[in-house]
Structures are given as structure tokens and as C-alpha cells.
Length: 334
Length: 171
Image (cartoon, rainbow over all chains, first blue to last red; front, side, top):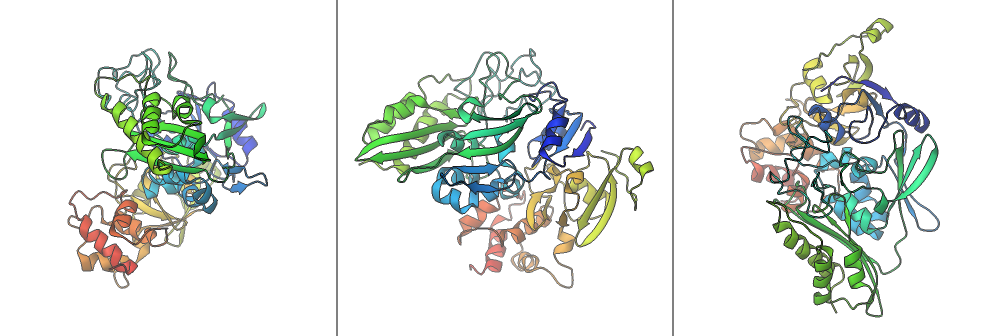
């Protein structure tokens, strides 16, 4: 691990000020916030992350889940994954989020990992994690050996000629389906970003993964209230029953009135370069009665633009079936 | 390996060497340390405090051999920077029970033969002891799910689950 300066920030303003000294908040950032450390410390040991300054934000508070009078839920960036998964309000009103969190990592890691940190979880692409390999995300312009190489776990949606790395998070998939927003604070004040606009496609700049600017700190995730009658669920498919990243996963939030689907929030995990919201699948369901054929059509629509790599073509059918099954178990046909 | 220095009292001179003053409360005893910021909690426990019961397996949060409790909750000590644990209460396997007064989970692992080589055992027991205070369903599968962060290359899993269920009174 490269050496670094360590500062335990006393408050949000100090954290932002210290991080504002960096030129970027993306890959290669010279200042990094330390929350749970489960991604950052891991990548620092691999010399994939080599910050000169680590700003510990664990003393900032930001560890509450608050339900406002209008029903919005404000989740502090430092709420641990385990605490969020078991929070009574989340379990009761956002089961897809609780299920997704508990499908991720191990009990130890869920006690460490935070809401804000999970939003910024990095890909498990083996070339990204190995500084001796070329990787356009880690070292722009160096190439992508995953294309034509080991790509079984990588993306089929949102890829480019420069990067096919998949986003590995479970939590983010649920947050996408729930229309979450991210609240950040920076040198020029706070701003709120729809999660759908938070992640960037790799394009020809895969080193840029989010819209975060240098010095911006995630302070909250905001969930809109779920109207009465909304049902939600998460299904994750993987190589072993526990403690493994998704090959494909689906987060769905559905509401039917008078036998017709009036709301659909649908997102896929394990198959996209970012947590993959699917407006195509949602459109295929709106106004329709919940039935198996309709669910299959929605799944077909969600994967229509998928591009297989040399080893991961199986994921396309896997993701289709994953989504169709998640829909059928969350809102059973007729 | 990082150079880690210990001094009983942090001082300005020590600071100038680059050590970060850190107070770790380990098994009820406060330790005032000057630490290389790169030092993990795991390496600090083993190499500075000579608490070698906590084991290093993968060093990347994947195997669970380094599981300890911080403020009563289980974590992977290999992914925690020791400097970030300033003021926190750490419990290791040495603080869970003693040879004369074993923790019930330690007794159960002995009774059920929940190990073979023993390398993962401290992490397994720390994980299992924390599980007792977490939401966990009654079945063996519920236990397996919540113990999936602790690998055992010898494959003692069935006896580990039996030991945990004994302590939980589920068998």
C-alpha cells in the first residue's frame, strides 16, 4: 500500500474542504473519503487506489434513517448496510431494498459498509483490480483485455469499445427501482441528483463513473414514499448460494389498481455497466394486467439491447428469466 | 509490511516521525499507539499487541479469519485501518473467554468438534458469538447464510452449524 496522510474530519465542511484539494473525485483521485473501507482499503492494498490523503468521515454523524412528514425517507450516507437492511420502516415499506442489502456481501462486511460507500462500489473486473494489467478504467488509454478475455462476470448492457466492467452492487439496483435520489454537498453548496442520472456510461471515459465532482460528499440517499399497495422484491442469481456477486439480479417495485399495473420500477444488476434501470420493461407493463406472457415480454424488452462478450452470453437469458421470475413472485399473475 | 511503531505516550516528536496517535481499547485495556496510517487493525492486533489469535487469511475481506468485534459488532479486521478505530472498543478471541472460563460458543465448538486445522476457528467463533445478537431465523440454513463470510478449507461446516445451534438452543 502506498503511504498517505490521514485526517479524521471533524465535520462535513472540513471533509469537503480537504477533498476539494483534489482535481477529480473519479479514478486517480488524490483525496479519498474513508467510510466503511470495504472497497477503498481493499483497492489501496492492490495499489488500484493510491490516494495521497485519506479523509475519514466516520465521525460526521450522517448515520440516521429519518422518515419525514411527507413520507420521504432520508438515509444518512454512513448508515451501515446491516442497519439499513434491518430498519423496521425499510423492511415494511421497501422490502426490495432490505432484500438486496441482505443478498450482498457477508454479515461482517454489511456491518462495515455504508450507504454512501455502496453507491460508489467499484467493479470486480479482474483487470481493473490488477495494476499489472491494462485497463481503460484504471489507466485511460491502456486498453481493455476483458474484451475477448475473462469477462464471464462482466456487463452485457451499456458497454463500449473501451470498457465492459459491470457494476457489482445489489443495493444500488434496488435504489434504482425505487427512484432514489442522492444528496451531495460540495464547495459550492448542496445538490440533489436523481440516481438515474448519478452513474455515467463508460463510453470513451470509463475512468469517470459518476457525476460527483472533486470535494463533493454524499450526505443522504432519499427515497420517495411508496404508495399504499406497492409490492417490491429482489431476486439475485449467482454461482453459489451466498456471499457472491450477482451474475444477474432484478429489483422490481410494482403497483396494480383494478387489475392493471399503474406503477413499475424495474432495474437489473450484474449485467450492466451501471445499476441498470429499464424504462423499456416498465413501459411494457404499464396499463397491462399482470400475467406471465406480459412479464416475459417485459424481460425481453429489458435485454433487447444486450451485447454478449466472449464468455458472458449466457447472462442475457439468465437476466431475462431472473426478471420474469422476480415480477411473477412480486405480483403474481391473475 | 508496514513499519509500525509503538510508544506509550504520543508526543510531538513522535508525531514528527509520521505516526498517528491512536487509542485502541482492546479486550478492555486501552493502548496508546503511534501508528503508520497504513496499518490495518488486523496487523496491529497481531504485530503490535501480540494478540495472534486473530488470523490473517486472504487479507481482502473474503475469508473471515480476521473477524473481531468492534463496539460489539463483527467486522473484518483486515479491511479496517487501525487509525480509524481510534476510541473504539475491540474484542478479539483472547477477550471472548479464557481457558478457565470459555465462552459458551467456544465450549460448543469443542463439544461439536467444529474445526480441523483450526486456522479459521477464531474467526468462526467471533462471527458465531456476534450472530447470537443479530436477527437470525431458527433454521440451519439461516445460520449458514449468516456464517457465509467465514470460510473453512477443511470443511468443518456441519459441525460449526451444530455448535452454533447448540448455543442458540435450536437443537
